[in-house]
Length: 121
Figure (cartoon, helix red, strand yellow):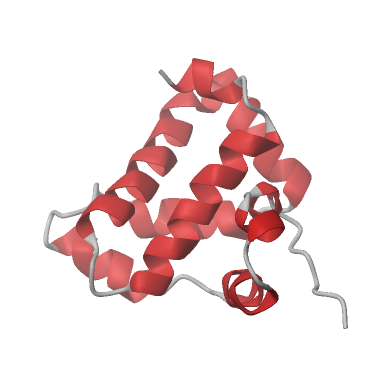
């Protein structure tokens, strides 16, 4: 049975090419635990409004995500999203699935359009 690919930039992550199907399925079906993100936000381990930023992004469709990421007027919000994802990777050890999902999303954002990274620097 073929996996259902999400309507998001997450699908561009290399993990969908190189990992075995069980790992790909875990990431495809993973829903970030916003209460964990909110708790980290409250304890100042993540920037304020991190949970809302992540939730808003994953609720967008594929084209909306691309427009958001490429819209210069949204540059500050895009940087907030990227900082949040990077801090999830660097600061959360108790939620390995969340970290794996954040890594895949970061990779998907970059692989979707590699020159996008120039505008994030």
